[in-house]
Length: 201
Image 1: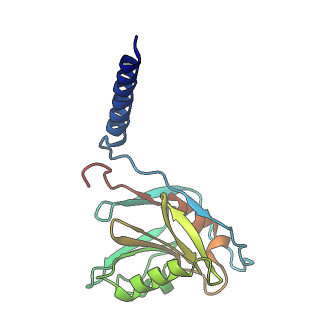
Image 2: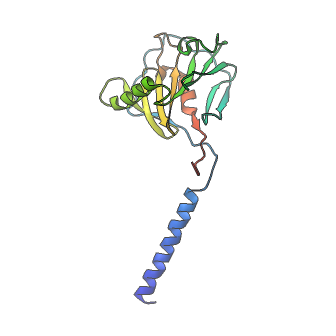
Image 3: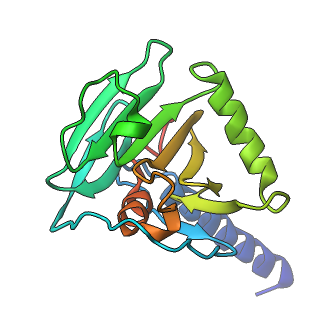
């Protein structure tokens, strides 16, 4: 076998290896992407004053309009509502939420707010400023949900995916508990899974 034949054979093998890798990577799938809730460096939680409710079992909340799932306590009540601007909110609490138009931060225990630059320009501005504050301003930490990088500050973790900001917030704190002290918040936030199709998006 001469040198030219060896080079051609190697190139053919390399071509098919690259092609096979491309086809495997671009296969359509509707499987949820894995989720993580990671912080680096990990800040210390504040002392816990309030006691969290006992959670016997968990269930999965699924939203097909905004393509995500989230683990929540099974017997908790939930309230979904969409503001006229297009902002979507779902709040969860151990007892019934009073109404769809109540201020969710004061009535819920845990919530997910979804918005973009058009539906809530101020919240979007706060999100972008929070990202820029990581490593520069005390209290802002890099976070990751569902392999999407974001920011953790106060009682909120936010990531942007497919043009939407997903904001998971520990609402029931009254100044007595932060996100890192809440096992409920950490379990729920770390379970957030995007269900967008990976193929033909």
